[in-house]
Image (cartoon, rainbow, N blue to C red):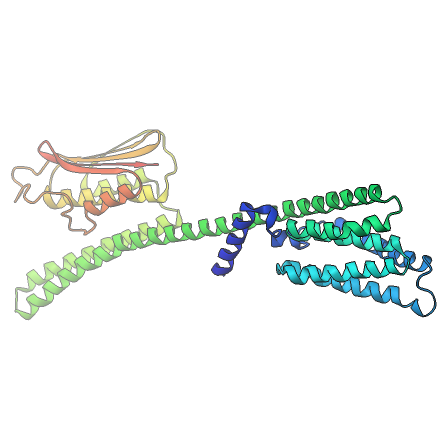
Length: 404
């Protein structure tokens, strides 16, 4: 399929570079998109011309007696040649196409030899128009040039009538060619637009798959990895005969991680379905566990799923870091709807002086939940935003800005 499209594109490009020497497009050579009224008119004209040619042969007196069956037989052969010409031009076969036109032209020559110049002229005119409409222009012009002597010979007015006939067939054939090419170009544009839409849909599907993969990675992979570490340590302690209370702590911690991972999985599924709660409500619910202050400013609006998820993940990670490294610290969450972006700031006052191990190891990405602010920074940058995290006075601050 792709090779066919490439060949079609190459053929189209060649036609655009040298249109006067190239074949009309396949869409132009078919009846695709031709109105039904136009088709009826064309068949009516073919029928009228057929009657004109046959009547002209019989009224000329050249097909009396035993020669009476020749006009319909000869004309039937010419019609068969015309049908074959339609298919050979679709396949871009110049030799076969010119040969079939030659059959029709010879039929006209036979009519002229039998004394029916009018029938011969009509058939030659049809040959010229067909050549100008469906062949590369050099072949079409050559066909007309070959038949000009026939017009001169068959027309009683000589060169004047032949010149008018030649000009008429050139104009009519080229007009039909332009009309067919315009119709074909319209269908080519529709085909290109369809391909572009398919490519856009495929790109959107890939982007959605990547988004789902990131959500699964953020929610499940890290959570399950942390649980496995805790459970493995618990197994080793059991084998070493450690104190059951120590093993219970590890199992309890793994259970807590599993519960948090399940909750986050539900939030992620809600985000993918587009029915998750608003960001500010999620922040207030999240802050309630840590008794953090929440300040929301700006006019509320619907946010893209990616931006909303980035805010949720960063808030969760930052609060987890506070619980781990600064237990008992006062925490403030500021969320703002701005003109063309949203911002989130989470600041804490630092660990109280009496907190055990206060402040040690407090840093970016050191989280027990496993998500990591470094991963959140990458998520923000993918969205065209930024994430900064670092000491702020005696505490720590995380600042996120995302276009939305």
